[in-house]
Image 1 (tube, rainbow, N blue to C red):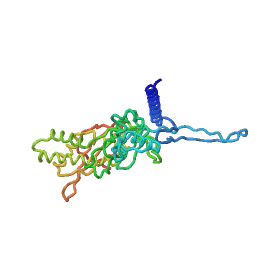
Image 2: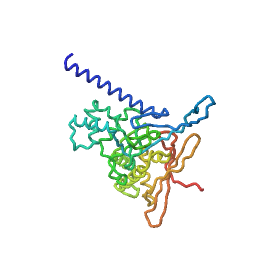
Image 3: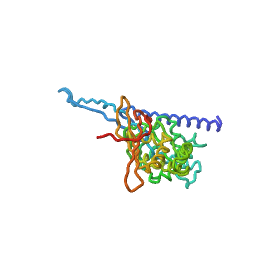
Image 4: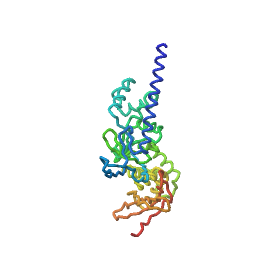
Length: 350
């Protein structure tokens, strides 16, 4: 066998080892939501068990113990807005550093950009095994909030794609924030990213949203909805709609997205392109401005869980006046959806 054949054989063996290791990690990611005690790529995961012991008989020299898994709980779905980030174990950090050196990635290239180069483009096939070794995080309001576990290995591509954009900034600068990540999935038990304990989030949907694209889309809808006689010019209407979009994104991006109300609000902000135009019209018609978006407690209607999302306006004048409008959202399952038109809201008498 000549030198080139030896090299080819070594490459094949190396690729087989990479595939085997990647499959091993992916299998661990999935079973963490199934068994009582597992280990995944971010740490030990424990689910609660109920255990009891009783004394043995006179012939025994100890106790007899048994355990059973606790009662199953309803899944906790999440619809969160934040930024995808990552962390390394020490061995993975060294592996990434060696890969950067091997590929000649300059030291002045940020770690985030360097990792993106290794896991995408021409280098992807060689280094993509690192994607399953990285501890992927979702930061909300610039704070680590979840450890991301992809339900499908293909989601690693979505995580990697988010690295192409700068890291997130605090959401009080939302109007200057270029991009956000929307993650939908199921909340699991506490895991560890290195020594940091955080809830696991099994990701069923991940998308990186360019806010400039959102604004262009809303502007297009606003232009189609604009009619003469509305009481303001088309430019004023666009500005009003855009201010509504910015305010609503700011509101939804400051929570963990795990309660029914938070999920309902997130679904409205990114699932109803026409809502900002309706809000802008109300602002102009009644001389008010958007103040807040609040979710009422969940109600059971038949087998469905319904949340009423109330949008509150306040007057621009000194004499304080409040208007309220609402829309009902079904949050029974993983993907909330609207079940009523947007209309004036009269709070129930308590």
